[in-house]
Length: 504
Ligand code: NAP
Image (tube, rainbow, N blue to C red; front, side):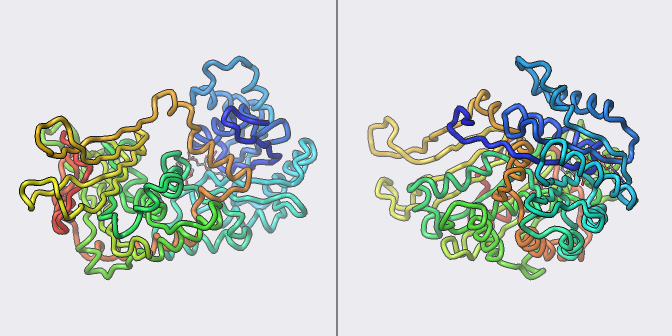
């Protein structure tokens, strides 16, 4: 079967066992994503889903929940076959199950075996742990000792969600708890940023264009900037956020994955193994700081009220501690020692309640020292900047200098812009749809390897330890600003400034 884009679509037989089948993630993301895969032909009639959780649901009730999840996700507009969600939901089976109770795994195995036979699934099993990580070890252990892992030619794959630990030791403990049952090649760690198309297209931009490939090195690149800026505050996630903070929520996972994609050397072949090796190498080549360096090069912040006092500060939000020292902002400088970019700084920044929502990457090229166009030799040409817009805009901007209608020969900067249209954006599959399809097909390109996760923790743990030695003076930035002044000074100290600097 071929899609309009000419990509060959294969369907794959599989049994999904979703732990946490009654939860928010399953409802909002997994059921709509699976439905889209069914609608597009990646799943046909030979698949089944077992949802498990403690609630005593019937199969009929489960079918209603699944259909309602599809409807809520708004993906059914314009569908000609109204019966499709019902047909899809008929492949779902609910099994009430407490993950601590061994007997329930016996019942689960029986149902799994029956469905395997009924749908001719050939022993292919995907275990999706849509539950808190503290349950991962228990589930993985019982899947093995109660013989739920398929033997023979079928595959066993485990999909897990963040948070993957709170630091390197806890991440290692978590990894050890599942690695007795699943080998690394069977584990699919979701970092949903890797499911976003603009993040996936970083490799294409770098290695698919001679223009950028030839310039992507320390001779031409002055610095790299990554900003994940949110305009919203902590909203209803205060409970979780109080235990996490911006470093654990955004930096260790999403930002470090982006860093690895931007700084890795070119793989010999574009496949998941070669890409993974280069990403691991890139993270291993990020300079490991001492605590003193970490204090100097990493800035934390927490938002206060806005200047007009119309928005609450973090400490006054519902569910937060009124003396909380949790950071809602992080900026930092990383230095890569990967050969091509050796010594190039990568400035990273993320925060809540900032001026404007935007995820973007700015590649700042070096200035040509010899400005033959300027009357005054000290006059600098505007720096060339390539911006990758990730969200909400998607596309690129290239800023360069050209002669623009003046009598003499003065150069001015212009912007070459490409943005995806609303229609193009609407056609891009949701990150979860793409990631579940990849897991179904056994493609690990867009999942985080344990060595990536562990190296990212090691880099961040030094910063955390340095921070934990001192009580922060929070709040230190106003809602609606672009974070603490120190984050501006971080670049100013290097004679640079943030490219993305919106005014409120
Ligand atoms: P949730 O809504 O609280 O769901 C938790 C699920 O676990 C429920 O189905 C609950 O069902 C089940 N459960 C809890 N204790 C159980 C037990 N002892 N035995 C069997 N089932 C049990 O959480 P969620 O938001 O879906 O998140 C799940 C995981 O994904 C978390 O680790 C979260 O950090 C991660 N995650 C979530 C999102 C998201 O958008 N929601 C995004 C990224 C990552 P019963 O109460 O019926 O047992």
